[in-house]
Image (tube, rainbow, N blue to C red; front, side, top):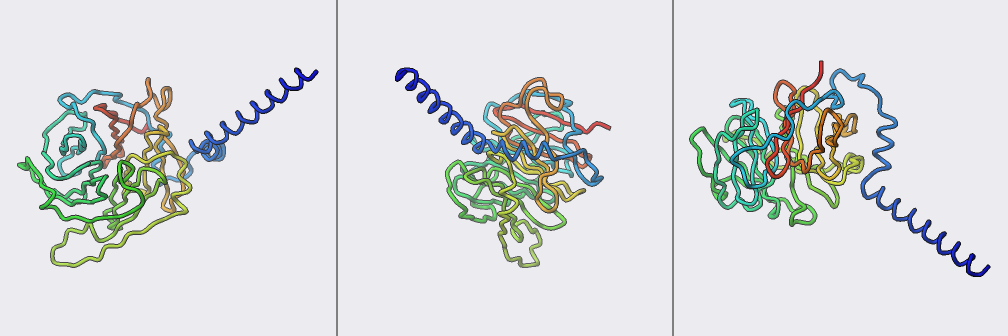
Length: 302
């Protein structure tokens, strides 16, 4: 009897421990919030929404030839109708065609750990240095082959821990003149910066950094890899590598739709291995890159 009682106690202790481990894991991966969102979200009734569930992959996991370095971030240039990304190991600004071909490479000198790039206005971009928590505004033209950090306009931000958990994503609202900056994790945060991205030399701007703690707590993702602002709806798209997910946030910062990057979802034959950048063109087509050099296109079904 004592032996049987001991076995029951061990079994009970094991079950309790297993429940605790599963609960901690669920919280770590934000599963409770994600399950609740899936259970309560309905089909889109908002004609102004991007509505990510309607997207399907049209170009999957195309290798970007000529790139051996890990790529990070993505932005659409509406003037050239091309895409730009950055590499961080050997810092470069890379221009890509809309079907994932390398058009040119621009050397980045003194940019440290370049992790994100965002188009601001014709020939003007912002690049982040993750480790030093710097934003660097640069100007390029069709003949630019090299950019020097010491010649760029810089903004230093001291937000939480540095290292490799810093600024991973950028997005720009050209109407509201707001630059969104994503902090990767611990915790995930999205900052709104006004004043820095302005490009009028005749006018002086003061820089303001705003936080939205309520919105950030509602982001049921483990990390943030990239951002995209949709000018048509005023909604923000947030990409998470570890959660294999893209979130659409409405004007109040509330999640309203998702796009899964797992195998079998949204037409994907395989899961996206390490999503690092997302961009949207003026036709609503989504472009996504994954380390080390994979390129994806998602288009909305009629």
